[in-house]
Length: 87
Image 1 (cartoon, rainbow, N blue to C red):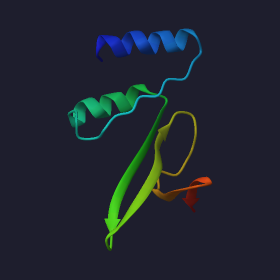
Image 2: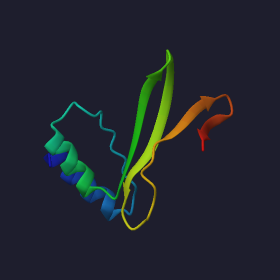
Image 3: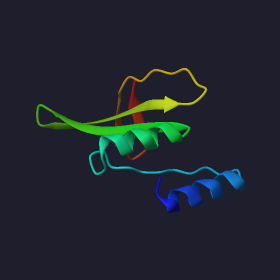
Image 4: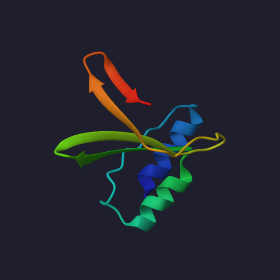
């Protein structure tokens, strides 16, 4: 892990804080991405796909330590009222 992530993670842990790391898939090696996924308590993924010329936004919980959950993708929309999940 890069030194700055070690220092930042330690500091966040010391103060009982919550750290959020945003990672764009494909920028780093698959090995490094898997390493990052393994050291954090939760990994949430977002994606976009095109279906019949329409962009579909999707979200899933990839992992969340200590919690049993579905890893299925859920579609969502962003509206004037906020984020709406299509369950």
